[in-house]
Image 1: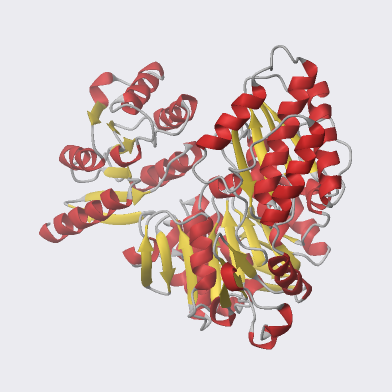
Image 2: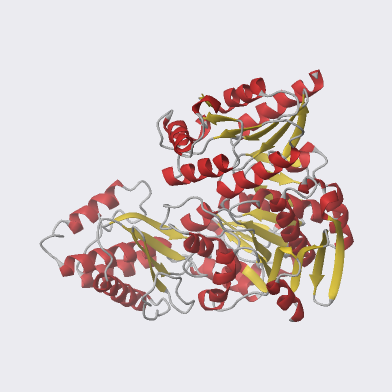
Length: 611
């Protein structure tokens, strides 16, 4: 088959703000002629089906303008071909997309692609959930168009579209999945089974409403920023639901544990009947696979963009990753706020494209480590929002109002000001919380205490003292995260103390990603490195494969073999590091699986009490 993945886009996505479909071209060269043939066929099908018309394809690999409803995004290994479609026509849209590519290939070289129709039919027959099994694919255009009309009729849900149109007209949040449409959010929501939707006139619209909502994405700091915002909204008196890589929570109560930074977690938060405010971690994977589950947010944050997850869904560089993260801008409501890191060059560069990409651009609140950075100063002069550090104090500006949030070094999360990445997280959270309506005095009070309890930010910069050894339990998982963790470890080292670190990775990263993490660690010349197998996240790798990559990368970087150890589980690695450490040392322990982290916390608490 000439494509390796074909999927439905159920929300605002990398390509456009609407729903649609995308396929990943594989095994063929996506030249201009092929892309033109694909686009022309898609346009004819969309016109035949009564979907909105599209405009011509631009020739770069950047994101296309919002007016364009067919998008070809060229990348290092091929192309992503996407088309916009109504929310009740997404299966049909995937069929149109696959046919348009295959028909273009067949027309160009009928002999070479003689078996394409048979391949399409076989793929359709083997699909686990094919609602159109009785209508097999065809390449002939007249027959294909007639088939698409039948498919569209089978899939059409005018009742669903009427309700969504009515919600949009009211500026109301809603959520849609395979079985339920939820109108409103949190304690102002009501869910309707798709099998029995009401008429729009029968919905009690006056009893439905949304809740203040923040989305948080980025390469590092997402979970910490989510927790900071949630702590602020709770302190303001709002019962807050939030989702992150550790689970879904309502105030201090855990509803479910695990990685819920995708659409499932978002829907759980927004449908929680006790929820009066929502904070949602929005990971890259969910954005690229399906799009964003939430249709409207008051605030969206992109913390930063750094090297991670390259090679998946056509994302091979920082520019593409920034585009993926900035998808959250497409759901910020009119009058809402997009919070961005002014110290991140990719975000500064790409923000100018948002108006073309989504048809509008939300106001931007910029944060930086230096409150006097040029971008922050110019934004304040235009009446915009900023947050940064001046003379050691965190300052928040909103229009003409300025607020001093306190001494940065006194905020526990900053570890005496050494954790600069957490200073950035605090600044981002301050902008978001203020935009949601939290008073600055409440934000300052939260920041003054957040991080004093281990439970405040579980798994992120948790600090223990064990037999005179300082232990930092963290989630650092990419080069920038490891760099930030090592800076704090070096800051906390006392006298002749040494530094030890665990290194490992999930198996679904590229070899180069792991090698980059190893190189950053080697820059700091730790005295001891335990290379760990993250056994819960092999993700297609053979046991021992990831540790071998790390070991070889460290040796190439000049790290002495005598200072290396290998453990085949996260907990064995933790114990190995603790056995090595002596009073005055600092251990940096990036532990990634939830189970291993919980076991590590229990072990460290036990040893701390014993000492």
